[in-house]
Structures are given as structure tokens and as C-alpha cells.
Image (tube, rainbow, N blue to C red; front, top):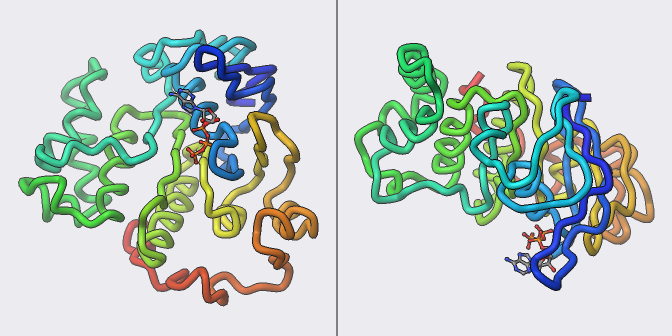
Length: 260
Ligand code: ATP
């Protein structure tokens, strides 16, 4: 396993937000953490990224990840795109991307990677000198992901990348995540849009009140009647075409294909 989390507990003072979570992510997988507001998804990925203290164990490629050491984790290959994206709107697209290479010692290669991002995401190249705040929500998410990729992560943690996006933009971001897996990246994805998330993930963990209540192959969870009743609005996914749902408008018509 690339990432192995065992008996992780996270507390905010007296609030015990994460109650002994076990989770695994294998190399090349997209693994989703789904669950309602306040279930502990953000807390879990922040702790893995080293932004919160925890007890229990987190191993990356068999090596322990110590709590509260975000920069060391980044150098070890764990990169987090936080909820809300963390884009600095008053800085240019280029300046935001440059933040992604600050931790790298190989400056020449890093600069070449930055140029490579512009080839991979031509929209960002067009807006290179413009303020990041002028990008659309979906483009800002693309910028946040591009910035995270510049640290050359092995494991990308994405916290609610579709939050606040119109359905078409959300689909665009889901397609972008799928395209990341094609490049061999491993992704741990926090999402509230469970239905769409289970379509792109390999496996998923359902959190409730800081605990894993169920986990398994995303396909199986999507078709589990209890889960679909409770979390997916009562409609199992079986037999559905991607893009056929009214609440998933825009799937298949996004600009995702141009990213590959
Ligand atoms: P959301 O989708 O709202 O981000 P989540 O599943 O990511 O939900 P968390 O944000 O991890 O959930 O919150 C888990 C629990 O921890 C909640 O009860 C929340 O109120 C609490 N919590 C989160 N951040 C803090 C904080 N800074 N201080 C105190 N309690 C917090």
C-alpha cells in the first residue's frame, strides 16, 4: 500500500473529530472519502498532509509520516489541494504556480515543469499574467491542482474540488481527476458529491461522525441499496449511463478531453 492509515484519531481540543480511522490507498488508485458535512473528511486529509496533530499511524510507502510536519510530508510526496483551493486571487496565475515549486531544490527542472503545466493546461498559459481571481471557479481549481502537481507528489489529496462549482465545471474537474490517474498519480479525494465521486473512484470510504461506517469498491457502494438510500438520494446507480442523470448535467460535455 502506498498510504496506510491505522487507528487515526484527531482532536480539536475537547472535540474528538476523527475516531480511529483505518484506510488504505494503493499506488495508482483514486480513493474517495465521502460522507455528510462534519463527518471528519477534511480533518482526516489535513492530518495526513501534516497540518493537524493526530494519534495512530500513517505510513507512506512503508515509512512513518509524523504528525504536524506539512513541509516534510510535501517533500515526501504528499500534496494537498485544500478545501476552497487556496488560490491567492491578488496574485497572477504565474505567481500562484511559482508557489508550487518553492520546496524544490532542482530549480531548473522545476522551471521546466512549470512551463510543462502551461502546455498541459493551455487555459492557464493564456491567463499567465492575469490575476488568479479573474479565473472561473473550475479554472481556479485547475490552477490549484497544477500548483500541487508542481511539487511532484506521489499522493495527491483533494478536498472537495467540486465545491461551489456549477454542474458543468464540476464535471470538468471530475474529468481532470480521472486524467490525473492516467498519468499514474494516486489520489485521495474528499467529496460530498457522492454519486459523481463513486463513478470515478476505484474504492471509497464512507465516514460518519468521525468513523468509517463502510468501505469497498466504489461500484459496489454505488449499488448498495442502504447506501444509496441514505447518501445518494435513494437511487442506486445500477444500469445508469454516466451523464444520463439530470443532477449530473454536463458529464461528458466538459472540456476534460482537451486536458489529456
Ligand atoms: P465538511 O464537508 O463540512 O468539511 P467534513 O466531513 O470535512 O465536513 P470536518 O470539517 O473534518 O468534516 O469536521 C469534523 C468535525 O470536527 C466536525 O464536528 C467539526 O465541527 C469539527 N471541527 C472541524 N474543524 C474544527 C476546528 N477548527 N475546531 C473545532 N472543531 C472543528
